[in-house]
Length: 290
Ligand SMILES: Cc1cc2nc3c(=O)[nH]c(=O)nc-3n(C[C@H](O)[C@H](O)[C@H](O)COP(=O)(O)OP(=O)(O)OC[C@H]3O[C@@H](n4cnc5c(N)ncnc54)[C@H](O)[C@@H]3O)c2cc1C
Image 1 (cartoon, rainbow, N blue to C red):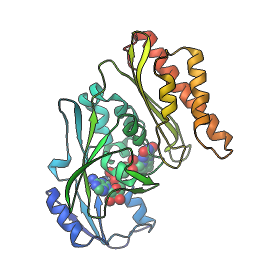
Image 2: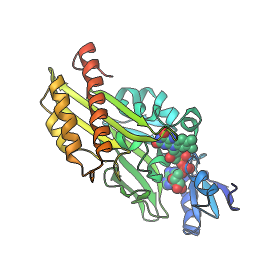
Image 3: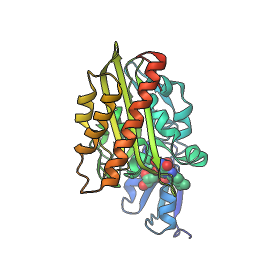
């Protein structure tokens, strides 16, 4: 399939891209890695007349650490996330989920900003974004704002992003030293997208779980955080009986509308995630990391 004709522009600055977007909100689209937008255009599900490539904008590249968070430019690719020492040290869950996206070509081109703005409910990264309490930096006609990733996605493929807005960066609070992280995924056999993806990080005091954040993607209409599973896990230790109870609690929390397959999938993948965390902390001590 071929796309409808379009004009291609390459912006040098965020302001230039914002100006071009504002000039024709209806017909312009931001182009990042193109791994979601170009297939949509080829299927004629999107027909922008102007594509604004943001790949050359320096301000959208790079990963830097601040006192309490890591700031990631929106044009950072999955591969850069996987290979970044800063991400590995301060928010490893993001590297683990980025590593499981697609294949090497997708990871070389696809960007964190593109994935979050596309808001596919079966994407990998959102599980980590929720569990890590990520914050988004957005620039638009009314200036710059920040908002929590939790709440940014309103419905599948629909976000709080206005037509004239650009996501410029993602901020992730640093995890406590020694926090353990895991991401497990059941890939769809044809597409490789997650039928379910479970991301968890936890910290320990002695042998007990001190804090624990869980993000689940793929299985529900929107990625979500199972808060009462997190509450249940806090204060316990990763013993076999705790893991069994936690997995069944996770399945009970959501409304599966009689879908036993989804309930079982959740049970199995929560069990796998917690078991991997348990094995790594037994192997390395309670501050180990999987
Ligand atoms: C073969 C294949 C396999 C894949 N497998 C997986 C998988 O296993 N897991 C997974 O999660 N994903 C998978 N993907 C999707 C992939 O992750 C995409 O790269 C990602 O969804 C989009 O990122 P992008 O940079 O390519 O964005 P683009 O396709 O360029 O853009 C996507 C959308 O976001 C908008 N946009 C992009 N950047 C910005 C910005 N900074 N500000 C405002 N709007 C912006 C665009 O206008 C467009 O609407 C796969 C894709 C392919 C082609």
